[in-house]
Picture (cartoon, rainbow, N blue to C red):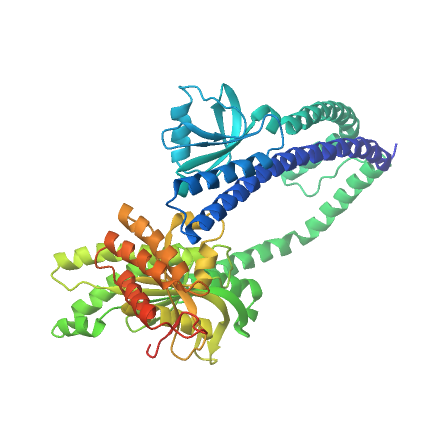
Length: 562
């Protein structure tokens, strides 16, 4: 029998099994899809109910009825009626608990057992936005909850787990049966045909391994069959004959390759002190073509500068060696942080550092890596300053600015001296962000483009962001939102930043609600006495309340200096 026929006998059952497995995969996709849709629909209904409750409360506040108990009760009744209208099954229920855990509203009877209430209230107080599983009224139920502050209600949308997952459970059971049958068939057929197919090949492989292990290129494999296995043995014998002829050349090529590898290693060791490793790797891969032209890429650019360096230098006037030693220690810490997070140190500009992420190798988290580097640099500075104090030397203070955008990157210069660097308006904007730290009394500022990258997905949980202003830097007419970021906040800071960000929503167009914004900034200032940015925005709001800005005001502050 020809090997082709044997292959058909092996491939055919594998195709059949593959079809079964594909069907199984589709069933699993169906399970996941049904479950996902059910969860999304429950979340959607919770969102719609929350919006409806907020609308009812806004009607009360806009008509000054929020202080009237009868009107508040009417609004609660309206929410209850709306909740009743979105119930889809007999086992589904929407209820509201007060802060003590008592049921104050329910679309159907729902009596919580005394031992269930503490666990439910603990779960609700954790403010988890996801879908949860709890025991209510003696049954396991799926819930989606949110806290509605005006009514002081925990509003819960709940469905029995058995009903919620019924379709998914049925599909899963059927899929497991099909999968078990498919696996049994595939394994049985594969074992049977694999044995018949591999016996002649095994003998050839054994002979080949004997020749290879003995390194005897003069030996040959016995040709037992006239089918494809026989042709395989003949081809292997022919290969041995050719290898025997080329053996001397192979040894020479191997020796040359070793020499070339050692030369490349020496070049890398020398130039990695001046050029990032990723640039050298790409240069060897592309054989220097990357050195000829630039390319436009979206990168994250960081500028860091030592505040008041001229004043610091004057303190070292009589001992410049100490100044250089301090700078070297400072740069060593800062550069290690940047490179450990896959950044490229572009250049030193006096006491400033310019770095970027995203070239020549682009990563999805370049913006986040640059921000985390900035935070690490600030943390490392604290340790540096402790050592400065012990040595009796002045402390360093830095400002860091980060921007993300389209720039031109490549080797720029002449044939005798080139720099792998970035240029463009987005680079200039990053530099301006660094300079704005002095005006806003901050250490780290990022632009809106950076914020949008780090706040997507789960990244925002790693750092805290505070919107400070919309500015048009010198030489630009368009404004850009600027944020300060921190890795961790105290309890007062976290609350104050949330209130501050809410105040910015009132402050900026289209709301232009300077009264509400002023209340927020004043509350933030009470939590963080002496906070410059809250005080600055509060003063602006007070000015705008007496002298409103023109109708076309867009909230942009124009900077006339760098």
